[in-house]
Image 1 (cartoon, rainbow, N blue to C red):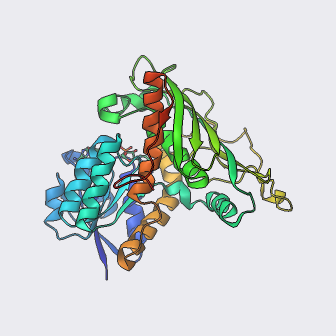
Image 2 (cartoon, helix red, strand yellow):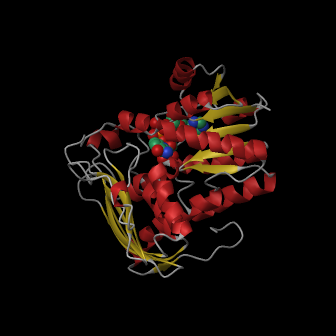
Length: 359
Ligand SMILES: NC(=O)c1ccc[n+]([C@@H]2O[C@H](COP(=O)([O-])OP(=O)(O)OC[C@H]3O[C@@H](n4cnc5c(N)ncnc54)[C@H](O)[C@@H]3O)[C@@H](O)[C@H]2O)c1
């Protein structure tokens, strides 16, 4: 069977989706939609997509099996719920949504329709990230007891000015945590398990003149297992030092996955498992420190392809995708808990899994 797929939203990241869909077996890209008329036509021409239309309803009429969703985050919910109601499987870009109630409605709508919901966190497909997860599973790190997320990125003012929706609470839902660090928070929770409590602060330091959301954040997360972790995130760094997620296991072994330059496939910067220290790849600050957004997205493309491939197989074989809607809800729960903690000055609990909740 061939999966007939449409692309919803034809902006920056949609090119990765089109290239991925063209490369994956048993998939046919049949259409794309975007209310920006010039953009959707140019996108269809550039990527060899046979049909372009302003809205999702125009795609649904084509008789699709699935859509991938590349709209700004606050628009994810409306698209995913409508697609589910039309009986379509959905692979949605991260973050799943900008608040937990929206994420729950998306999970409930896809459950009700009996369709697959996957969320794009392509960094899980890096071999270096999978090596950490395997080391947690096979016990060679022991139970993870400490974690550390470090997101030290540079974004120029033009990045926020280039799209009207960026940097505003109503149209972006958050800043560096919601848009950038959510990838590393997803990895952290994949390694450490279910988060239960969060405390944190958000600030706007470098970009305060042109955005209302945070450009910097510090937070502490406690996990059900007893592990704890810190999150440091900013888009206000001058030298873009990329992203790093570190895990300390109860054996004392330390493992980290480093993404530097930003967008580059992660490597195990630290790997102190006895007898395996040769797996470490040292940090080299001389590497590219100011990659532009286009090249960052382009370098992530191969891993978009792997996740699209996983999603297509999940639909065709009737199994769960690598990252489910419930998985994606977990990283969103951490991000929104940091916002609440910063606003209230309290430690914010994250509810245990339930119907429509993280598990
Ligand atoms: N996985 C990754 O590494 C990665 C990288 C970049 C962006 N993203 C995610 O992808 C999403 C889009 O980001 P972007 O940088 O491509 O944004 P963008 O602004 O470049 O593109 C968004 C597009 O969606 C269109 N759109 C808005 N409402 C729509 C609707 N109702 N139906 C159809 N199209 C609609 C806009 O006209 C625009 O063309 C965001 O959620 C972002 O977090 C993920």
